[in-house]
Length: 168
Image 1: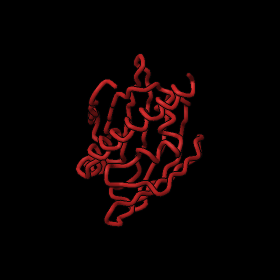
Image 2: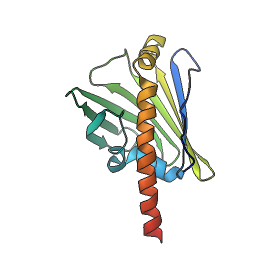
Image 3: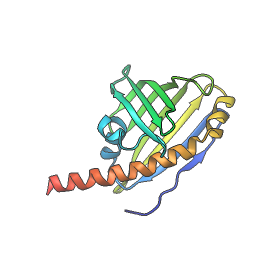
Image 4: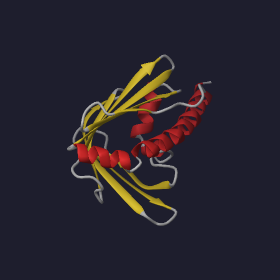
C-alpha cells in the first residue's frame, strides 16, 4: 500500500464541496465498493457509526437507503435517488437525510478515475444554498468522510487480496 492518503477538500463555489482521495486499488473494485451492499457495509459511515440498513437499486431512477446507529443509540438515515450511473466511471444521485440537518437536498457526483494501479475518487457535493454547504462543513462532513475512507482502504485491501487468491 502507498501509505497514508489525505482527503483534498475544496469549496469551488458558494454551494459546493469537492473532495478527492486516491485509493490503492483498481477503479472497478473501488466502484464496486460504492455500489455493492456487502462492501458498503464494511466502510460507509464515520468511525463511531454502524450501518444497519444498506439497500441499493443501482440504476437511473433507482435509489438507495442507508441507516446507521452509534454506541449511544442515536440513529440516522439517508435516502437517495440515482440520476445517472456510468459503471466504473460515474454516479450522480440526489440525497437527503431522514431528519434533515441542512435545508434542501444534496446532488452528489462521484467520479472514478484510473491513475495507473490506483483510483482517484472525486466527490462533488452541490447544495441548494451556501447555508446548507456551510452547515455540512461545520457538522464534521470532512472528518466523517476521512474516517469512512480509512475503513474503505481496509475493505479494498481485503477485497484485492481475495481477488488475487481467486485469480491465482
